[in-house]
Amino acid sequence: LFFDRAARYTDIDPGMLQYIRGSHAVYRVSFPFQRDDGTLEVIMGYRAHHNSHCTPLKGGIRFSESVDLQEIEALAALMTFKCAVVNVPFGGAKGGVRIDPHQYSDDELERITRRFTCELASSGFLGPSVDVPAPDLGTGPKEMSWIADTYSSIYGDNDANAFACVTGKPAQFGGIAGRLEATGLGVYMGISEFMQQEDLMRKAGLERGLAGKSFVIQGFGNVGYHAAKNIHDNGGRIVAVSEMNTAIYSSNGLDPEELLFYVRENDSLRGFPGAEQEFRG
Image 1 (cartoon, one colour):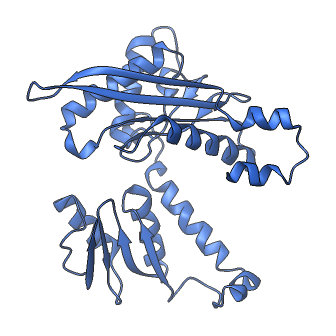
Image 2: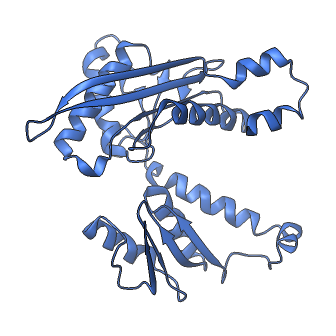
């Protein structure tokens, strides 16, 4: 829908628009998985290549119960458009595994990740010069290190750049320092820059600057936390934060550091003592 609306303002050939609209290639895989308790499950995984006009393709891998092929294809398209807008020479891709990572042990998540890596690599959907995933919803440096280790174990003898098959790895495992907080910091910088534009702020009925203004953070994972922390550290007031099944509110503001400590201890925002109101989904 949004693509069609935007396309009306271009002079691009209709045939080319039709090509850009869809995915260049998609991969769907299912494999049996034995849980720690001995029960068997079927795991579904997906990877979409939206457009390979530039390689390698770039896009995250997410672990979520909401993952399906339609979502993955849409997110892959957004990756192409985002790269094109800022002239980054990558094509767009996206991948996912349909699981709730909170319901699996670390050992189970490692086995799922390594198996999914093997499936992608053997089908041409992973490689330093082909398709380079990154962390996304429900994944992080740990999962990226498993992907890099698995890929390099299979192809490392013939590919000196095997560890470059994925970004977002831990710094001690070939990653880049600062990558973890980069996206959240980018959110803060975008908001801060917007709020320095006097004409735009006037249209919004607000004064220039971030300090003293109230903010609501949707999601409190890696991106949400670092966005909230930078806003808070620069004078903004975080009055509400939401996660997958809980939202909390405090008119006096919430300290992201305290929230992070609480979430790490309790795996949820539920019951946070500094909240005036709590909403459960």
